[in-house]
Length: 167
Image (cartoon, rainbow, N blue to C red; front, side):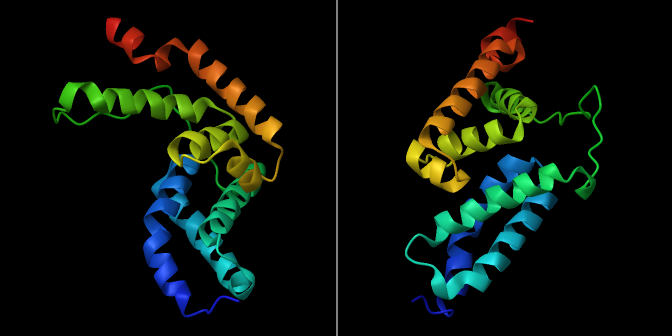
């Protein structure tokens, strides 16, 4: 049984990784922080029951709460626009910022479930089994969602940095 005194150390150690995962899912820092705080509150309540996989448990809470928020569209109204805000004029090494922006935009066009799979598999470097456990689905579902997400990303010409540079 876990001692609650370990909770503070866990939060300090895991916060950056959990926040990154939440940010990749929500695409907003404020929403990501809210999401992590909500997940950590739920983890605090279950802390005595948690085993050795505490971070995986909190990551699963993050994904589930995000999906729940996404389903309740009233939670936050998202305003979209056809153009991006003015970009900084600071030089970036070899167009890395442009490529990051393309990846960012492409992730934003994926449905929430596919985005979650891509984030967990490729940004969090989880296995298919770990991703399935986190999302509460089968490994086959993870494979099919990954396949669909990658196919959608490949079809979208604006995602390919080489194509985008030519235009």
